[in-house]
Amino acid sequence: MITSDNVFTVTAIATECGILKLNEEMDDGSVVEGVTFRNYTKEERLKKVNKICVVARSSPFDKLLMVQCLKKKGHVVAVNGDGINDAPAIKEAVIGLSMGIQGMEVAKESSDIVILDDNFASLATVLRWGRCVYNHIQKFIQFQLTVNVAALTINFVAAVSAGEVRLTAVQLLWVDLVMDTLGL
Image (cartoon, rainbow, N blue to C red; front, top):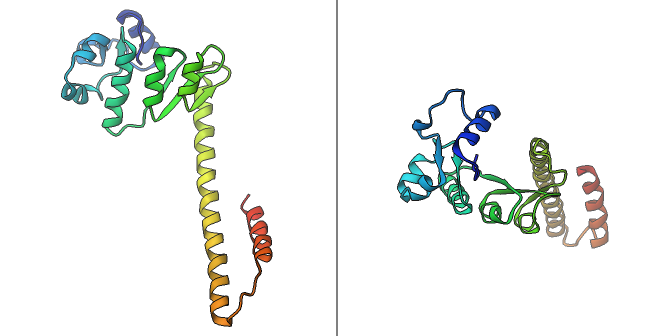
């Protein structure tokens, strides 16, 4: 959780959301201020980034640094924002999300997904549907490649062995159309 609010407010909200455990010490490095995070060296940032749960009093540059560090560590990073200051981090993230109603146009253009109802609870639904659609696209492409390579191979082998092409281009298009409807 990265925000510009003060440490005590952010700690209370993070505890309520389940990001921090109740009575977790701020001295263990899970809660830092943006200035502290910004002043770490690159090596320190990379070393401590996995332990940090909350960044308070952060600047837009801190958000961008956090995204870059997490990506360098191999994490899949999603950033949600609604303002101009969030745009660089949204753009840098693997998945950028913005709010559709209250969000600034710059944030919407920088993001991959726009949450139209501005309801943060919709995020889980967006991710579930996104993964589902992605899986279906992968399966459809795999089906298409398999079917089309098989059809071309059969037609090529028939043409080489018989000395003439058995299926014309129009017939191949009809076969492809029938096979495409089966894939849907």
